[in-house]
Amino acid sequence: MKKNKKVKDIKLISYLKPYWIFCLLSPLLMAGEVLMDLVQPSLMSKIVNESISGKEFSQILPTVVSNGLLMLFLVVIGGFCGAMSAYTAGVASERFGDDLRKDGFRKVMSLSLQQTDKFTTGSLVTRLTNDIVALRDLVMTVLRMLIRAPMFLIGGVVMCLTLDVSFGYVMLASIPLQLVVVVIMVKYSPPLFSKVQKRLDRVNSVVQENVSGARVVKAYTNEPYEISRFDAANSAYRDQNLKVLKLFALVMPVLSIVMNIAVVAIILIGGYRAEAQAINVGDVMAAAQYITRVLMAVMMVSHIFQQTSRAQASASRVREVLSCEPVILGGCIKESPEKGTVRFEDVSFAYPESSGAEVLSHITFEIKKGETVAIIGSTGCGKTSLVNLIPRFYDASKGKVFVDGVDVKEWDTEVLRRKISFVLQKSELFSGTIRDNITIGSENADDEAVLCAAEIAQVDSFVSQMPNKYYTYVAEKGASLSGGQKQRIAIARGVLRRPEIIIFDDSTSALDLSTEAKVQKGIREGLEGTTVIMIAQRIASVMNADRIAVIDNGTLCAFDTHENLLKTCDTYKDIYASQMKGGSDI
Image 1 (tube, rainbow, N blue to C red):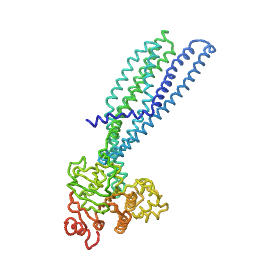
Image 2 (image 1 turned 180 degrees about the vertical axis):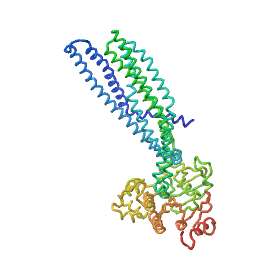
Image 3 (image 1 turned 180 degrees about the horizontal axis):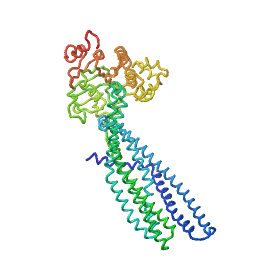
Image 4 (image 1 turned 60 degrees about the horizontal axis):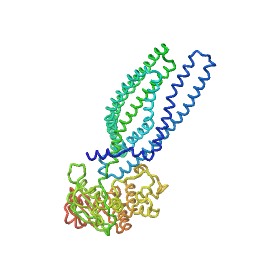
């Protein structure tokens, strides 16, 4: 309940405050357009009445011309007001959407991994695009129609009654009918729009998964299954959309039928009144136009409510993102006399939103400054979970993790993460040049520093063969590069920061042993004094580490040198025996 209250407390309308002048001008200009439009039927009435008065053409010409020119002048004024109203509303709505999207993206960037996992990528994409577009469109509509609809409704009724009070009976019958239809629409549409957005989330998720995992899909010739999965998600989205369209497909024709019946009624009543010479024919024509404007105003109201219903669902979803406070909150410590040390004290960890089963259990060990420590163990034993606790991608469920002698929860998060370079097994590359990808997080690095990092990571050996060298453009997610090349670029990125601590999460798995050995040598020589923590699957990759942590089923079963582990740790001996048959890595 507290979370829901927080969500409701965020006023999205506050994003319009910087553009209040446009929000004020748009309705005022729209009022000018409506006023010009309301005068038109009465002027037309004068022309018609004068034309059928039986007078000579020369006698009616001045009245017809003067009223005609006045109508033309008012159309120009009304058109200018309408155009400026659309412009000012457009400026306000576009800037509203732009600011909202920027704040939404900043919020997404501040969320912890567990929060982004909970939302899902597809849902966040929908919220920052489709949902904000719906809100922007509502702002545009409201700024233009909020004045237009009531003025047409009230002005049309007043002008129509001034022509003949009997026309009021038609309005008394038709307006309530239209309002009943609008109320029904308002009642049933919001839940439908909420479901539409959730179905769209699913479509975006499937698309995102298949675009990012296209190679896996193709490698396993899994296209038919993925197409069927997309078809299922897309069909659910289509069917939900159709339910909404059915509702509005009934609404608009019903409103139109009521409007047309009202026009016929006005003509019939006016015809009888004109025959009795109680009203002029031109006034009947004017009344028909006014009743059309009145009922069109009600239809405008229905359109506003239609967009409001959709935007209501979108607003709730956008507010949910904006109101989501990061779970990982930084402390205030920014300095420490220690450099490059890591200590785990009785640490246990279970992933949030999981069944509660611990991935790590009672882990205790210490890494000294400048030490190279390897972490090895079977797949799924908790190696990556362990190193994720150091830069606070997640927080330990129990126990404490210290960096430079300070509990990571007390560090300013940005300061903590600047101390650490994290090189992932899956090398994330972004659209841009190779140099751009190496300098992520170190944008001010000079060419000499970039080249030095590239040489340590063995990047220069293949980049120097490219026509544009470090300014070679990388396709999306590095599609134009091999797995080993992407890993080396990611390693260069980590090295360039010259961190106190550098973590390699099995980030040399795509390298051959010779290249890996060169990289490790380059790191030892080029990053002297830097603490190195490396996760690896291959014994050959960790044998030269100062110490090796052996993880088994989430527990630390040994932490020692390679030689000592071969003597004392059965788990390590089993891994060694399985990989080093005949003394060679397999």
